[in-house]
Image (cartoon, rainbow, N blue to C red; front, top):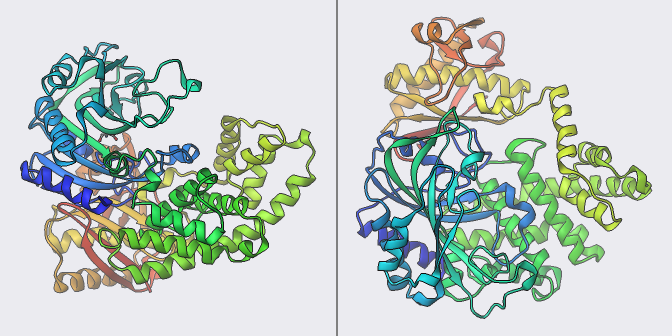
Length: 600
Ligand code: SER
């Protein structure tokens, strides 16, 4: 079975159960500043899990592309990846535990024909004022799961899911609930006593693989630390496509499925080594370049902050791993072409599902990679020289930070280098130095949460002002129901997401462009005022949909045309913007549109 087959089977199974298919949201969350990248299928659905009505109904299904940066250091074993596809189905106040567990079980045992005896399930033992999940236990028993295959864990350790983790880790306003996980047991894998006397589903030895998680999302954390009930009892199910495929194929190594294997084979070929014996390095390379390809596909470029920093870290880690695998000089000079052909395999695997414009993507991948490799090779050589010169005593967090700051050495790479000389560095301390520096140089990523700004250069500032004009023009042409839900600005273009249910016509696009250009031509002086939030809203200032604002806010005014809550910065006069052009308009999920525009 292939990954594409499995994805189809899952989506069809839930479509047959009256679920509506929603497309995968982008890897960069559009209206959610909690993470740099979408890290689960539920993330784009948070407003609906909180009780807002979803335009497509109460039963949804999809396959969501996800990236988890916190897993970067775990990559190298047989089952962890930073990038993965999460198969998901949701009930927004419709069905609950009984149907969810029964349907997933039916999918595993009847559609995929996984042997029941190889499955194990876990349920919540309760705690912290949440009761034990007896109901799920009974359902699993009724489905024929034996008592000794049902495992119970205390809620502060396992079997509770929220984006922040355990119940006590959740900030006020965050949602979560007890969950029930399904594991597949690879009986051919011997338990490793290094991980504990007895093997069990959550043991790390690799015998058990988590293949699905049904979260019963019914709680919201309150300011006083307690929990309130959400307006509806929801189901949030997520299961890794790669992992379910590995279970179906009965291979404990997800890299041996067709979602990875052609990539591994390409690595073998290009570095001249076999997978066997070099698994760790090759898995890192395969995972990171897959993630990088998806990021580049969304227009991310390597940078020293935000999403671009993650991409830079991935590419640089791969460069280091590739060097470690093959220290021959030819590889060093040819790294771009090696990366290129590996990414080519990634594009091939996903082209029918995610990369329709594959030729353009290939070019972009090549550009981004060759530029980054060039930059990195030079700085790596310079940094390594400094590192070699340094005495053991000098190898501390500040030294690591300077390597990072001056030569772009990712923390993890420095950590590995230090370890070779028997030196440990403290990540927290490194981060403290990093944060202190950010504050000093005023490049704190705070701006991103307000306006989606990547940096504060002249070009991005101009595009930010253009974003306000676009927002106002959209409302004038399409109506006041238009609400901004996301924004992202790079040096070259702005991206604007908003709620609107129809594709824009040619005529509407022309009108919007003309209106923006007309206001640019009037050369308005930008006005800014601070006032109470209430007063700003009363005056009709527009804001990001669903965003929380402080009690006092800054309001930017462009003549009588636009009044908007915003942290800035902006140009002084609109005349400096140049000509505004809409480059692309399309859907960005159910009921949402996305515009790319630039200043020429
Ligand atoms: N949100 C849950 C998870 O990420 C299930 O979809 O595991």
